[in-house]
Length: 250
Ligand SMILES: NC(=O)c1ccc[n+]([C@@H]2O[C@H](COP(=O)([O-])OP(=O)(O)OC[C@H]3O[C@@H](n4cnc5c(N)ncnc54)[C@H](OP(=O)(O)O)[C@@H]3O)[C@@H](O)[C@H]2O)c1
Figure 1: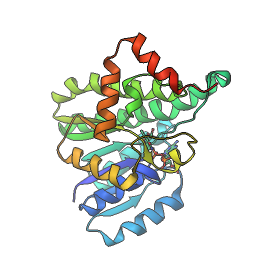
Figure 2: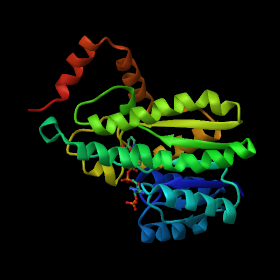
Figure 3: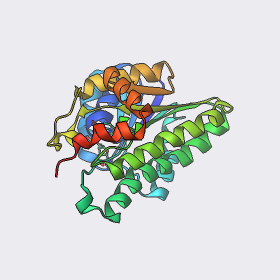
């Protein structure tokens, strides 16, 4: 049975992807901080041909992540696929701007992902195979109001994947960057604003796993929203700011 490791597996997109992989016959090692949610996830998956194994972990603690990856590799066998999904978004406006918001986003979204990549790449490079998927966001395409910290971390992740891809090709390691639009999860349930093209987590998981099976470099969805934001990323600044200024409420 192929082995996947997923971070942020206890809720939202990570939970749905874990279940979708287990439904398709994968053994999934599921990580996040909350052990009880992981246990209920494992129980939910018990009807599928695959299996979910809870593995509590805080990805902001570098040494613990390394030990966990070594433990999974030793006990459950080589990790064929890692989905580095754990992340957060805190909306704040410029009047609340503080280094703390940035540090929190960077510690989890960026450095948490890097902590996972470090030992994973060591193992995968040695065996010249493996697949790593990093969950970024469509926000990575271009800066958006109220998302300066979140967007900065997601743009960094996307840029990192683009940089790694040509190097990893030489090692036979696949890398995928995932750019979701709005997905209904506990994270977005907090949002007070209108979320265009909102889809549910199961729909997102299906699109993600289909894309992973095809070993795509980029998985971006929903298609129409991704297309519109891609076009926006090519606009000259004068026109782009004219459009996004409409999103600012004072
Ligand atoms: N939902 C969207 O519309 C959307 C759009 C674009 C991108 N994304 C990205 O998709 C990913 C998942 O988002 P979501 O909407 O599914 O959010 P979510 O429901 O809040 O799930 C976040 C997951 O991350 C885990 N997590 C948080 N801090 C952690 C830590 N320090 N160590 C390990 N795990 C940790 C949480 O579990 P614990 O609290 O138990 O640790 C939870 O399982 C994020 O990277 C997010 O930026 C989401």
